[in-house]
Image (cartoon, rainbow, N blue to C red; front, side, top):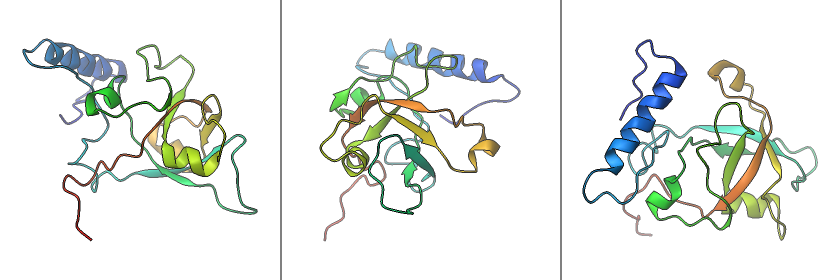
Length: 161
């Protein structure tokens, strides 16, 4: 569903989507419900948004620019709904919202690149991209709470080599 703001406050929009999830979850045959900023296997190319970031304690080459990562905003249960296991740490919780500690989940390839042979969970990531001040995403540090496998959320059918 597209975001429907039409003069609603951010809290009203969040409540609307929570209500939709709750109502859909009661439908016969529905096992899991989650929401996300983009729809896997549909919006990937159109919403391939990435930002620069830094991470405390990450391995970094001398004078290298901050790395870039694709950005997705998802609800608790998103990974379970897609059948994606959490490799390390925990899923998002309903309590992970505005006013609470900011948290983030990263992919396995990002964790392996930045923390080879070490855990990424409980380290802090901070968005450093200059565009953040224009789009309303906080640059406050976020605690890494989980690592998930890399997921190709753009290609429904694998391309043959």
